[in-house]
Every structure is written in structure tokens, then in C-alpha cells.
Image (tube, rainbow, N blue to C red):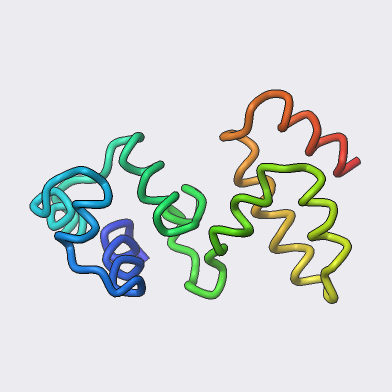
Length: 125
């Protein structure tokens, strides 16, 4: 799935019109439209806002991952806290859950502070 298709899909999944998404991002509806038709791409700050609104990582936004791999905002938030990550891993019932969470952790590492990054790396060892 292309970036433009992904943005449109995620917006529609939320039930938002382009104008609603634009308002949430503090931009114009024409900007959102340009993204969705592939004329322009969001800048880094806009990408971060999009990911926060949709509850996904940039890797998912740009990777075009299938919808069933999109993480909930609660999971994204929990990945910011090493103790919460440990609690998540303990509660999983199958290998695929653990694999998906580890992938999400790795996707989030570049966005974490150095202290949180080190804590997560230590936890994984």
C-alpha cells in the first residue's frame, strides 16, 4: 500500500473527512487531499502527528503494513515505558503476539530518549 493510500485508508477507518483530519493536524484540507492523491508527502513533523493520531509508528505508515498489524494507541504508549513492555510480554499467549510486540519495540527505538532506549535494550537482554 502506498503512503497516499495508507493515509486515506487510516483516515476513512477513523470515519473522518479530509477537513476533520486537516483540523486535527492544524493544516488545510487541500494539504490532506494532496497527500492522498500522492502529489505531496507529509513533512517529518506532520508524519509524527499523523502517527500519533492514528496510533501507529512511522514504519507502519511508510511500510504500508496490513491493517491487522496497526498498533493501538495504548500499545504505542506502553512501548514508551520499559516496565509496561515487560508486563505486555508476560501476558501474551502465543509466539505471534510476542513477535509483533518485539517488532513494534524495535520500530519505536529511534523515537525514544537515550535513557528509555537503553532501558528497553537492557530489558530485552
